[in-house]
Image 1: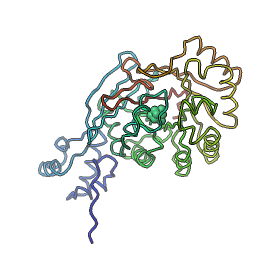
Image 2: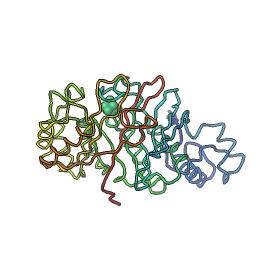
Image 3: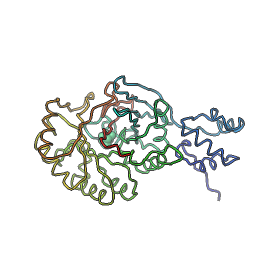
Image 4: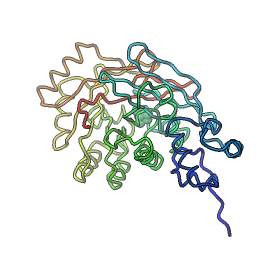
Length: 360
Ligand code: SF4
């Protein structure tokens, strides 16, 4: 019995050979030409001018090369961040953000799910529950929409948009392998970061796959009782289990981990919190990234004052914790961590690394 051909959502994620086969192209090099156009962000077959006209017309009628479209674009004057609302094939909306840092580095912050099941109480996406996982094609397409507005090549990717990437690990790793293809976007794996709230089986799977991307873990506090309340994921995989997984990850070659520490007024900014954090990080190669919580409507948290943050830095110094304090870029367009909001689909966490080390 002939096996039915599986039609992907779009051509993003396919190799030139796969494109040849799927579109039944009469000449093998057409596949390479189409692949090259797609990498440049050209998605209309009509604009792929090195293909014969009759072939372009045939392909146009056959299937779309891209499955999503941009519905909104907003730019922040000061930070240079650009936030995009992307409509997926089924009408779901996700957001992605282009960030430009002080070194001129361009980073794409991508969503991996519509909504999120994790329910972190400081994140607007956490209030909406999981709608669905995003396919690898749809993750790659967010990057493509961003390169169209970027004035320079986007060299870094962070999976810190809507959703928990390790809860959709198959699509996320497939998209990473595509971003890394040398003849394609050619993004170094060391410039790709996955951010997790602490999905232990996902960390173990990532370790097994030996995919040397960077890992960021949202910790918020090194106290099981309080973390249980702030991040329900802790009730399933507590701090001890999480630490065991992180140690295993590093034993098997995983690089320095970024510990995301969202600063919440009167909750995780006292000396006791600094002391517990120092104890938790023992034996881990980790850098703490401090992010004062970004105000978001109807959320039960407050942003700490500058004095409160300074006091906490002093405690961290006292307990020898290595940290960076992240500036919040994109706040003007509601594009900073925990601020992104999608009409109907509620909201999205957004976060990014202010990585001090540029390893390349
Ligand atoms: S912080 Fe991340 S994992 Fe937690 S609810 Fe928000 S999107 Fe989900």
